[in-house]
Length: 149
Image (cartoon, rainbow, N blue to C red):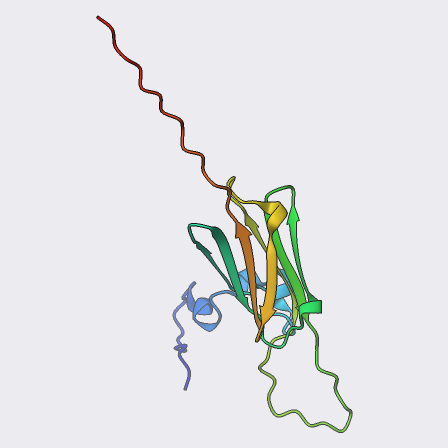
C-alpha cells in the first residue's frame, strides 16, 4: 500500500510525501550514510539539581573506552564516541541490520555556576552519567543601615 497518490495533476509537494527530509540529507553528510544515520546524534537528558547538572545518555553496546568526555573553551561539555561495526564473516547471511553504528558528538554550553574542574563521568549498564557540580551561589550580604533623625 502506498501513501503517495499517483495523479496527472502537477503537485509541487508530491515528493515531500515520499521523504520529507530528503532535502536535509545532503546538508548533514553523516546522516546520509546508512551506517551512521541512526546513531549520529546520541540523545541525552540534562537535569539540574540543587547540587549539580546531571547529563545522561543511553549508549547500549558502546564501551567506556569508546566514549570521550571533555570540557572545551572553559564551559562547553563535549561528549563524543563511536559504536564500531560488528566483525562480519564471509559465510554469514544477514537477514536484518537495525542496530546503529557510527560516530556521535554532543556539545552543551554549561552555565556560569558549573564547576568544570570537578566534572565526573561514569558508565553503567550502557548508560553514561556525567555530573557537573554547581558552585554555591553566594547570597549578597545585607547590612542594615540605621536611619538617624
